[in-house]
Length: 528
Image (cartoon, rainbow, N blue to C red; front, side, top):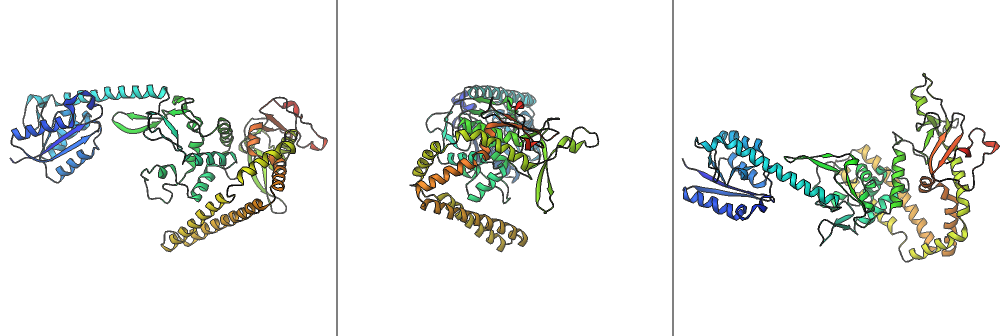
């Protein structure tokens, strides 16, 4: 019988440590000598260098399988059985089923295994495959142990650093700040601190045309969806909770299901390996903590339909559950938000709690009034005016409308692409009108902001500093970050009294109850 022979060679990184006999060159020389001695015609040589034997998606192995399917090969030779594979199930499949069904003879030089003859070595083949599998399992345990040890020491063992960082060019297992991506990370945290949700931040970045982490890292983008390669709310939410950005090494969030499988399982946070202070932070601890408080407050709300400053921070005093919000029309047909106890909503007939209904604006106004009273002694013109002047002076050399102009340019590009999608039939007429209207409205807002910014830069610096100082003094108490810093939670009692729980003790000035607040008054006795 005329044989067309395939010489198959495999070497993994772990095998390379076993000595020079496992090198690709030595395997090739051994197989070529064997083929020459037996007068075999070699069709091709297939080499998988650096591939584990537990995987059968090796490039050259798959190329060999394709040639077998095309009936170009009817004899496969390897140095030993472990070169074919170290997974005894898959190795057995190819030897016992695949090769015989395709009339392919397999020969292992050192093991003496020959599927074309009935020899004693063939009877031991399953045991050889199991031993190779056990070897791979043992190697996997050792590698995993070494990696775990490096993780506990705070050494980075991943192949690619998290967005905002890059591998150190000279030091192994260390990451440094990527100065090109770090400003985007800071912008994301700043937007979150301003009150924007993860979804809103993702839409904002996509509108600006900022490349997503996958696109920035030149990773292959799966799927043909128009949203593929775009920023997503899930990705933003994960970034906002990642301690890597405050200088802590976070690893072990996923583990492989098995040394035979590439599938990974997500680990609970208590099993993560977190080592503090291993690299330079992009985000300061104070900003990170505030963002975590904002994210935590939003977990109390199941729906995002209605947004208001106290969302996720206001609770029922009696049952302790977060208050829900409902929208009702007033006599003039205007939308008015009302806070209501969720326990009462769900178990009205069982009388588990009471309605607690009150206008959201009423609670917000009273809370902001108290914040303003607390902040007033510290927000003085003499202290804030020099700060405003120094900030204006630092920005005088920069183009004040640069960021807005970049956004406008990106928006114009998006509008042009939208029109092209309509012409090519990718967008229906209703979808086009909806998206076009929304983008045009955003463009109008940006143009107005740009004009205002240009007007401010042309104004007298001292007058502008005065204006900014007064604006800050008038609106500081409405700042969402300040609200997060000062107030832990707000409770509403059944008789419409509002209790504020601060994050500090003995606030100055102390809160007072006024006679005209009988329907919704503050109780200073409940302050922490």
